[in-house]
Amino acid sequence: MNVTPLALHHAPLLHRLYTSAPGYFDLISARVPSLSEVQRDVEIALLDPRRSLSLVHDDHGDLIGSLDCKRDYPEAGDLTINLLLIREDRQSQGLGEQVVRHLESHAPPGTTRILASVLGDNPRGARFWERLGYSFTLDARPVMSWYARPLNRAPLNGPGAPLTVASD
Picture (cartoon, rainbow, N blue to C red):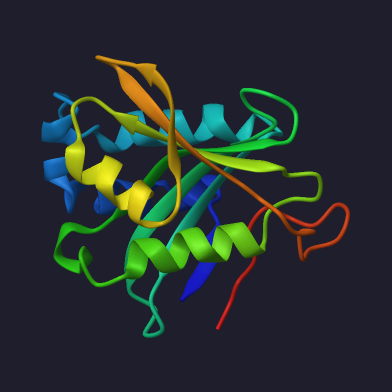
């Protein structure tokens, strides 16, 4: 698995990923965004120094997912997963768990807790986070609910290191 930072020129890849996961957008009652909307969203995200967008490729180089996180949100020391999206034809293969475990082991220095937001009425998403050891933390329904897991170890990457790094 290779988790790499997303740059603006990667927006077409992210758009392709979104079109391969229409079920997610159905779940949140939204249409799949257009390429220009994805480009604009990426531009805005890249302006926030606390935000990290990553693409996830399998060992063969195929795009399988994306990860969108924000450091120190909602509180200092928190790392919030805004969206973990795995292509529909690659779901239920343990890939989402691999991405989360990678993130946990490469969390920025000072991270004390990882939160995951689950949009809408998504019992499958809630079960996913609970299975990974995250606990229900905040009810903001009908829009979302939050799950959290404390980090009880020192992060592996050093000061100034990016949120995600490529891995084998």
